Length: 274
Image (cartoon, rainbow, N blue to C red; front, side, top):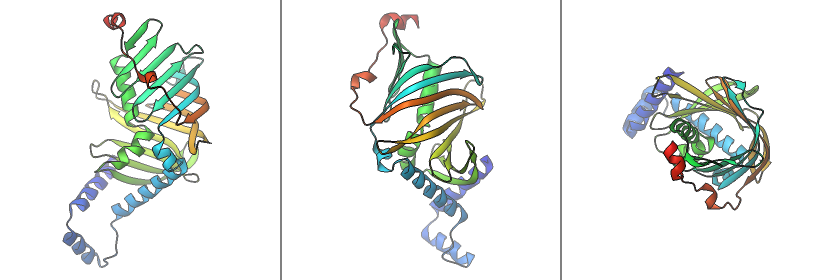
């Protein structure tokens, strides 16, 4: 897979750098000026599938929504085994980089995320999250479906690859990979019938132990909400083990959110302890 991607990227770069005369010469040598290089046709197939996915998700409604509210129950796992009975949660997300998550019936454990900060708010006060937890969250946000579709695809130097049909979440799927100019890559698995995304996968290398880790997110139980198809079941995997699962009971888009919800700063007393 990596070798194939590398070859395709190199081919795409050479094509992009070729002058019109070079392109015409290559077409002439092939015997047909109408012939299309295989990698270009592959990229067109990938783009067509991504366009279908966006339309299935709601088209402009999905591409332009400002915020989303979610309510449901979340479960955490350790090495694939559940380590809690689950807890109620409320999530408020404002595109592109503001998020607030409230946990427990009393909603007295709160996490606030901004462009570059992550805070935990409890009865003890407000503190910045541990560096590793914050880094993990920021990474997941960079590879989120919202960012991939609304940010990555609009960047120069993006490369698209159609990698054939497969099975994802027990459904026939088309596999499309996206690589940005910095070498970051994500693979989407799209339902062959509905064109909705079934799964997302990306990998990254740990700076400490140099190991490559794979993170996946699986979406299921889609329902139409305010013109957008929203998954009501979301499951995350880390190196093949289930790490988190959320079952939603309510979803709303484009609500009037108070900006104060996303404001937080570590109290002096709490900050000193950490």
